[in-house]
Image 1 (cartoon, rainbow over the protein chains, first blue to last red):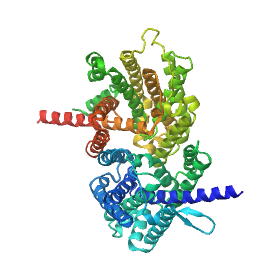
Image 2 (cartoon, rainbow over the protein chains, first blue to last red; image 1 turned 45 degrees about the horizontal axis):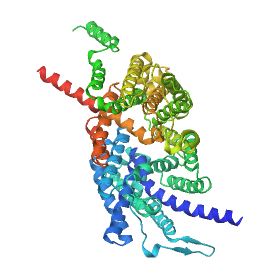
Image 3 (cartoon, helix red, strand yellow; image 1 turned 180 degrees about the vertical axis):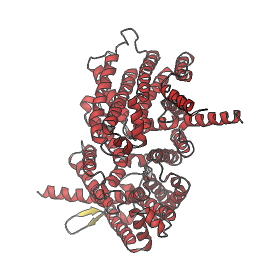
Image 4 (cartoon, chains in turn orange, cyan; image 1 turned 90 degrees about the vertical axis):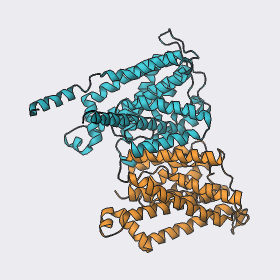
Length: 290
Length: 332
């Protein structure tokens, strides 16, 4: 009985940590897909880029951890703005096939580029000394860094949700997701809104990739390897939703951890089967509107 | 020109769509010439031909049916493993092995098609992807049957027609793949020019209208999906028989993406995109990977982005544009 309880706590803890990473990376994808209707398979590349930038700053240049994260988020956000203006924006409203093929091309280019710059091996993640070891709660101890992931996730998610609920910019985004034409005709500059939202989503993905590099190592195949999980979060959560992907991330993070712990042989298989059934039952996702 | 003459001309053009043009012999002339000109590259050549067949099957559902799939390798792998398992368990006759692989992959196509084709857009994309990754995981876990990540060992394939042994130079494999590809091409060509093929294109262009005129949309799509699955299975079986091995890689999502790239580079929905894209992709991969592991993804990714941004029709689309431009120049 004691064991079952301890195992459940472990699964819940590590599952929630994974869910935070999943959500931070995927929420931008959900907004871009919902707002622009753009099938962006290359979204994971922004997370990988964030990881590469942050880990290179920390490992090679000795930049402190928080500053590395900030620089990673800012630089990836800025770079994604350029990409959005130059390339992505040309394919808005185009056939999905073009978007799919363009973003597959982008995955390949970033994969090759990362291989050329950083080599084929994954980058090591050494958390700063104050985030190593374990934290003692009253009944048991938890790894400090994973606890930090959860805490950072909660802070960022709260900030994001409050930002979208309470600010003018957030209201504009919600209006544009609901009805783009109407938003445009009441004077919202949707094209500028798209660029900013895209940059925000990419910056969050970069943070997720960098913070989560202790769970999902940063290597050249990152964008490709985890693409299925990001897509599951978005498809199950519901396109354009901000909260849907959060619950989908929790569901996926905890069940992935549980399956790997209890049924290591069949973990991924069940996740995929579950997704298939879920999407057949609700093609618009758990929280999407029909 | 009178109105009736114009109408007659249009009718003539429509009726003559399926007639063979001299230019259509070109791929076959090149393929046979390559057999004699590059005897050292026949194993690669056989792989190119197999990729052409795979991309041709994708063209049927993507180019003509308008169904975007991220999971076509599922059928390629099912065919490959069917042929491999037959060969490893004593059924070494290649042609029946090929037919069996096509049948099993086709059956798998009917079952999965019935599920995934009820959806559209992102959901359809996700479901084809899910079928592919599920199958990959299943093949990985069922290692007692499939050999898991080591691949299936001990595949034995008898000589084709009892006469032509699969040799290490790839001569038999090349000609065998070429013959199968030719038959498949005849079939696909017949299909796309048939009334069935026309209605498939109609569904791609405007689903609502096809529903309105009473076309059985789901059945048409399912039929095309099944035929494409069977042909992909035959392509997978060809690869198994040519290499006497089948690995998990034949089922990977990378392969599903690869065949999409081949078709987009060549030009989709025009029957010959596969014939242009596959050699381009496979030969570039072979050459560039030998130089540096990072060159290949960089080059193919950049090429793909350029094609999507500048030349939707792929290489064949560029050819069309050039020919049209030359004609305009020639006639001031």
